[in-house]
Amino acid sequence: MIIQMFRDYWEAVKYRPEPEHPEQYWNAPEYSEEDIRGMCCIAVSESGKAFGFNPAKQPNPVYKGNAKSRCGSLYNPYYHPLGKFLQGKIKGSILKCVDFVYSGVLKYDPLAYEFEDERLLIIRKEATDAINELFYDDLERRTRNDGTRKVRFMLRVLDIGLFLMKEDWFYRWRFISLLQRIGKAVEKMQPTHEERANMKISRR
Image: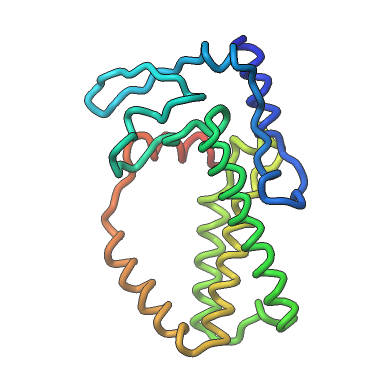
């Protein structure tokens, strides 16, 4: 049972070319009702209290009913219907939406993602360098043979934002001012132990 669950996990996360429909971005394994009844996971709270729960039928009890930042998911993305819904339908729809907007902007203007404004060029260079460093996923490289999937997504989001700044003067200085304010607000923030560990295992 455990070995089969691991095999199903790797099949679910294996890299595939961009699918036609959003829900196909996530192909979670299916289990029999008997398998689902026997599933059990352990969740540990910040205070060290342990909870046993069925990930196919119950939310993670550490995150249920609160707004804490999570190390994992409220609903398991491999077994729980709501977890599969978020991972497949919702996240897949976000990816498809970004792809649609990115391509549509090029239809509007083939030079949409080329810039002469020095401010936009500086933002693009700094953000591109940061995205290439921070969003490369070595874990996905090893499990899905593609560590740059998140990088490509983030670079498209960046280009769309820069295009809005170039095309519409309403957004241009407001976005720059927003970036300046955010920079001051987050300058002294530090990662949690779990966040630091995740950065280590997923970076180049």
